[in-house]
Length: 178
Image (cartoon, rainbow, N blue to C red; front, side, top):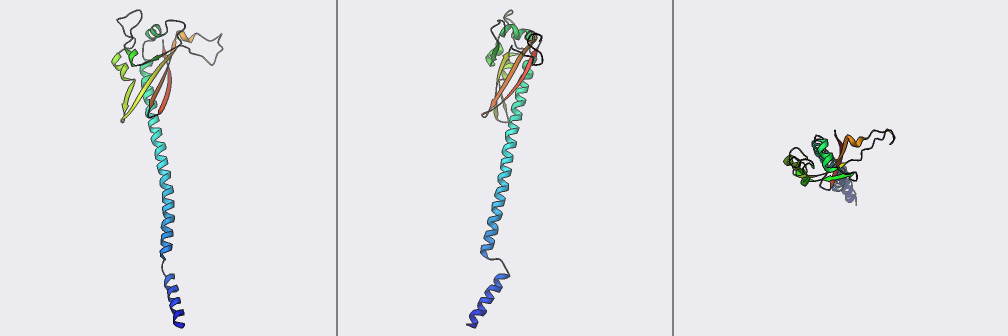
C-alpha cells in the first residue's frame, strides 16, 4: 500500500511539471476560436471595401457619361427631343446617337455618333457597366415660388444617368446649358 501511495505522488508531481494533453487541446481550441473571429472580421471588411470600390467606379462611369452629354449642343437636343409641349422626358439609348436634327437632316444631334455609342456600354476591370440616359425638360427651382421663378426650361435640359453593373446601380444628375 505504501508503494501505491508513492506511485500516486510521483504521477501527481510529474504532471505538475508539464501540460497535459487536455490542456494543450483546450488552449489550441480557444486560440482557433479567437483566430476565426478575427479572420471573419477581416473578410467582412474586405467585402465592404470591394463593394465601395465597385460603386466608386460606377459613379465615375456615370460622371464620364454625364460630362459627355453636358457638352452637347443645347439647341439641337431641345429641338429634336422637346419640340412639343407634351414631351417632358426622353430616354436616350445607343440607337439615338445617330438621330438627326429635325430642321437639318444632314446634321446629327450628337457630335460623333461612334463616341456617343461607346458611352452606353463600358468594360472596366472585366466588369460591364451599362448606362441609361434620360433627358428631362421639367427643371424646378426650389428657392423661388413658381410665379416669380425664371423659366428655366428655356435655358436648361436635365440629364439623369443611371449606370448598372452586377446587380448594383449608381445615379448621377446634371444639366445641358444653353
